[in-house]
Length: 266
Image (cartoon, rainbow, N blue to C red):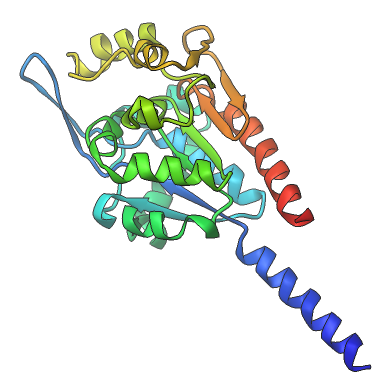
């Protein structure tokens, strides 16, 4: 009888542990401005809202608890361009839901720090870094980002980098970069030109992400401009632009299922 009770208790504790570990960390920029080469400043930049919120919504529906982490635990700003209805597939209700989330969600408004993210890698099944110009200001220059990517890689977590976020791979020195040789996708040169000419009205210092990734030794693949395009190579999922949410979510969700299955069987 005692053995039966102990076995039941063990199974209950195992179940509770499995549920507790079913978490995803969104690593977000907290930058609000981007300096351009022409001396102008692109204001109200930050995280691209639909790249973040549509992914958040879908991953939440899979049963994952989601935390947020930013530099110094500062609330993320939202890129003003991402409020344009063309990125929301004529779903104004979804845009409104996203705006209310940003205004009211407690975790979004009080994110963890990147130090916390580094110290707690093991409690998450994976990380997701949404795109937007903001990350080209703060995350790409923060020493904790390459450490976070390498640590997640080492622990075989599922890593999702959206649009501009694959540029963060470049923050890892080539001699210690675990993603060398991986297939990767990102915002394309043509899409960068569109953003520079019609959205920001100027070029930032750090650009031509696709070329830089190729030079680093990654195999950059691309879809058509504004295509719904993403790539998975083992635990790394990368996508191209604000129109690529469906492709990204599909691949990331599949990778999560495989991750959970492997860890359940251990």
